[in-house]
Image (cartoon, rainbow, N blue to C red; front, side, top):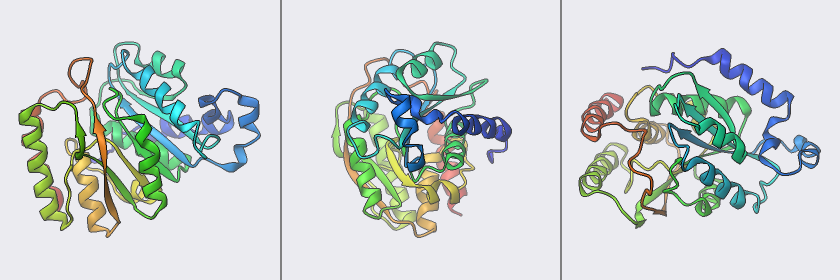
Length: 270
């Protein structure tokens, strides 16, 4: 519940190996060229949680690489996939596409996967962290827009589907998202239109200073705790595409999630 199940020793070894091998250059074409630019340091990590996403993860990574390779971060970003105990070829597909992959030995759930992401990102010293999904519903082309808002001074940038365009979302999920967002707006005293977006960018200090303790509401908890710390929160409109490969594998039951999420939101706040 409090993140104690994270294997800190394993993560420490994983990060050390990346540094020793200059492993983050694996995201690029020319290792020799990128190795010469190692001194520039790691600026951005695009992180993706994945569970049994072999059909989509490779394409998602390739699209992100295409976008990020045309930014000023060409030499100083990596794509990190945290493979949450997948039973398919998610690890293989992600590695082949150019991501650095850390794997849980068994499925631990999305909140624990997010905690692992944050531990790795802060250990590697990324200045900006971008969190997106493995199913391709968020557009890679919009990642630089989120990063730009962080560079302009925002501590936490939320990609709002409701301010942008939603290609497809079930009615009950849409109503639930709206309800969560209204409550978050009241609790944080900030206008939040999409409190459950999985597409966000934030500064290193947000990852370091906000400890996620919930197992069901890491998205809302990050927003609540960021507001409590007076961090600057900004929303930008984003496109949300229809999922072409069935249902999300990261959330097993919408009703069970909703019940536990409401309970945890009020526990977090009060």
